[in-house]
Amino acid sequence: MDGQNFQNNPYQQPTPPEGPKKTDALAIVSLVLGIVSIVMSCCYTYLGIALGIGGIICSVMSNKKQKSGLATAGMVCSIIGLVLSVLLLIFSAAILAMLASSGYDVSSFLNY
Image 1 (cartoon, rainbow, N blue to C red):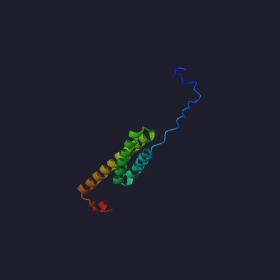
Image 2: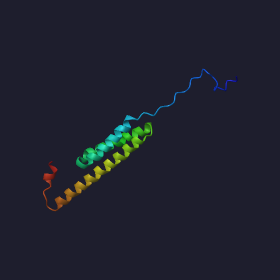
Image 3: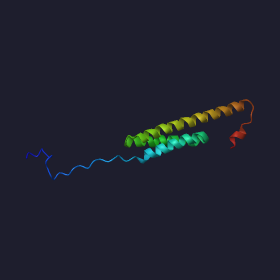
Image 4: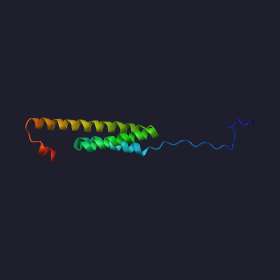
């Protein structure tokens, strides 16, 4: 035997098959933060912005470790939640500015 043929070696241990890869916890966190960011963008825009940014950060950190569809979905949901929150914040500021310029007392809206 020349030492190059290991196929017929009875003492060679077979390599165990690789199981499915474990899902990264950061990918799950980014998806949850993205979904909650979309929901919170309707009521609490500042919270939606914060959760969207947190979801993007978690998704980027998860994608650096291992690429997964869950982290990509978290990134997409976080971006959608962030954009919705910013758009609703701009829209509400524009409505309040329009009301204030037309003579309405907007201080009652700001004291909630």
